[in-house]
Amino acid sequence: MRTATASRAGGCDFPVDPSLDARVAPVRWRPEHDLGLLVVESAAWPAHAPPAPALNRPSPGAIDWVEGPGPGAVRLTFRPGFPPTPGEPLAAIIPLDGALPARLAALSRLWRILGGQAPDEPLTPPRRGRLKTMLRAFDARREAASYRQIAAGLYGEGRVEAEPWKTSSLRDATMRLVRDAMGMAAGGYLALLR
Image (cartoon, rainbow, N blue to C red; front, side):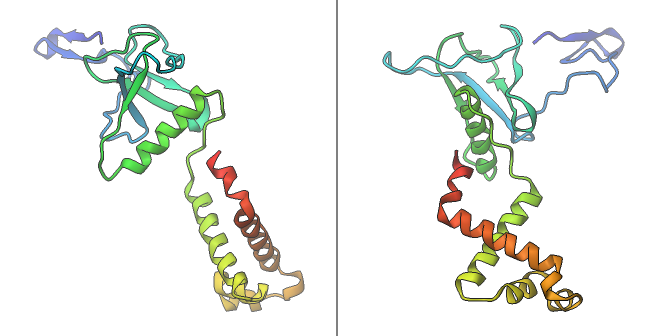
């Protein structure tokens, strides 16, 4: 990493030129604060290991880069002092701490990107909420609850009774939730794993 020295600041080294506007200066997060940032280094694998996938490093000396497009992209950085040799297999350093699931999700996205597949989009809070609601609707339907009973359990009895059931938007939403949940239970969940 090249550093800038500011003589007016006591000759201190800075990872980014301090004269740059903060809006254009590159941001470097530390892995313990950015759970989507993977730390990689060369791995010492046996000779029969498959070759390392090609990475899209912006330059041979770059220590940080992004792999993949859009919100599913994965940020990578080298373990300080251990830059991988091109063509060698890589190892990701994943601490076994409370953030392990988030780091494993980032590693899974990287694996998909390197394999030529579209990266999994991180599960957004609204999507996670819909999946939870689908599970509740599925459980209720499996216990022989009517769509109206399911809607009352999900949205409240007052909202269900506020409009005619046959033309209610809650009826349609409840039926969609149950239909989608049934599809997931019948094997549609596998699409989440691919």
